[in-house]
Image (cartoon, rainbow, N blue to C red; front, side, top):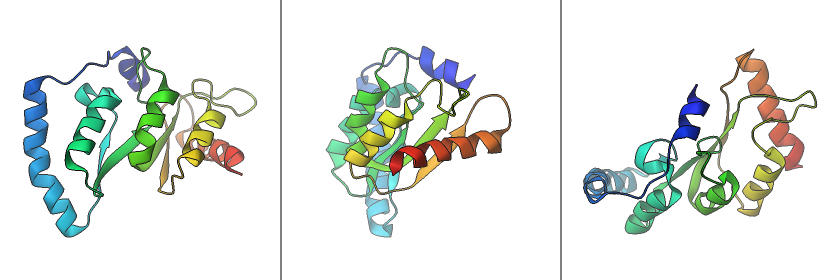
Length: 156
């Protein structure tokens, strides 16, 4: 259900009132994160964070080592190229959510090209955590491990 909801979302530019609302929140959070040395990450998810350019606007506004991206590989709409959009966000990624929904008999994810994703992640010299998620039918643990195994397959 989550996959269908995300894919149906149309990415849109920020409205002026949204920019002001987010800036007010981040004006308080970013200095505190810097002081406490706690990284913050904006996930590409719903609403204004559906469009990578919106996230990049805030990252560029603050230029803080403590404000980055939680890149969710599955959170792109049908109107977006998830690979080129991920490339835009990868340089700012603090962590990655490697999502899967369904697997073919050969162990490959049906909806996402993990060989391509791993190549992009490695080319970006990403060294943070990669969190695996499974949002399909069947055994959650088994399929999460299959997602992990798929990443490891292409990592080496």
